[in-house]
Amino acid sequence: MGRGRVAAMAAVLVRGLARGWGAHGAVRVGQRCVVGRGGQDQNPPDGEVGKAQRAASEGAGGQPTIFSKIIDRSVPATILYEDDKCLVFRDVAPQAPTHFLVIPKRPIPRISRVGPQDTELLGHLLVVAARTAQAEGLADGYRVVINDGKHGAQSVYHLHLHVLGGRQLSWPPG
Image (cartoon, rainbow, N blue to C red; front, side, top):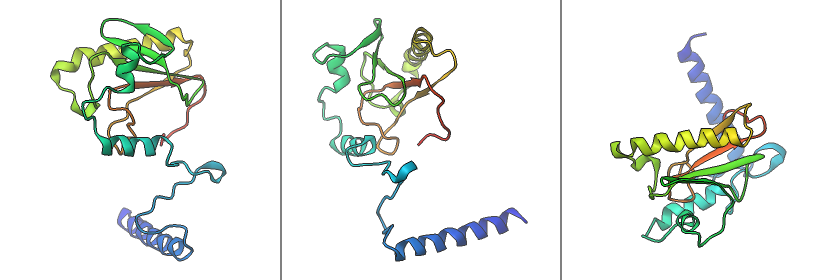
């Protein structure tokens, strides 16, 4: 069977499923319906996606982020490493047995806003992430994640690398 035929059949199937779900009220136009294992909603309004959507609509507004407050020590955090360029601390809502964040001290709102002048800093963040992962005992591997913008579920507009490990991670993420 050719690729064109398979694509056409897939399109018919998707339209049919969409009509069937709509008829049963499970999905309405413009409504997100994402259900994961165990029937639990994977995007509750108070979850990371909801936080990201609110953060994107509020914009930076020149206000200090929670990460700026961690850097200046006005908000406590469990700090794992610090140098003149970055800070590493444990995530307060870990998504894996080991979950820490690597942030630059110089605020960069999003990875999509970096320029050539940030090359050295970005490399430094990755090296620090790798060394901290090693120090945390993640010899079997780990994942480095950077969320960008509303659709990337970025909830804090200060560039940060999530490092997750300590268990088998699934693929694809999200």
